[in-house]
Length: 259
Image 1 (tube, rainbow, N blue to C red):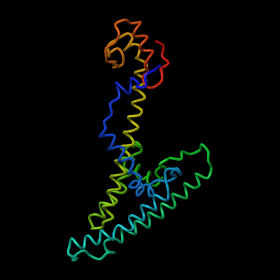
Image 2: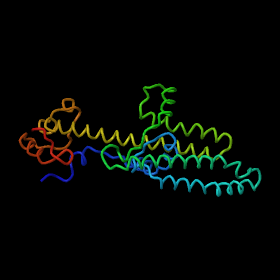
Image 3: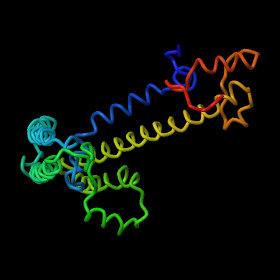
Image 4: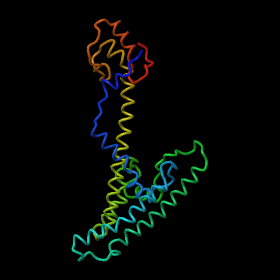
């Protein structure tokens, strides 16, 4: 009977708990700041990725937020020099109206895609950047920009730059746009890091499986085993090591490589 704990889980894999918490946090809360940007520059979302209810939740939250913000600004300034409410928040509500229109348009796209349940489209797709935005990116940065750079740095810039301009002229919506841009970039960075770790784990497990005989049974040095070193006290007899190797797996199932 094979051990429940595999060699990979018990000996090799080391998890950075703090890093995992940070990544999980960004991935879990990222949908809302990303939503504020993606409805403008992306299209054809998967129907299980984009939900109109989420867009409406963001709309309602941001629609009521200016009231306590304005009152707080009045209290802090003793009611003087704060300006009129609409002078501060007209751009805020104008953005919300355009956001709602775009969100409804994106929702209609997802309904068309979801109307046929088949294997033609990934239902969790984050969509793809619309042609006009992509043409602008290519014009400025060239055609060889990677999609990773695009999603982590370039797409957030579509919100951060106008957000910074609004901030400079005293419009609170600028802060919202800048925070959304930062959340967008960090969330995609976390998603790519998670994907990197997954694929590197697959490669490393494959190498471990391939080098199991050489590293454990034959006890060759790491430089002859693609860097693999199966540390721990082992039986001195080769046949015993061979039998022991058959009793543990690298990652839950016995590799097919012959010993």
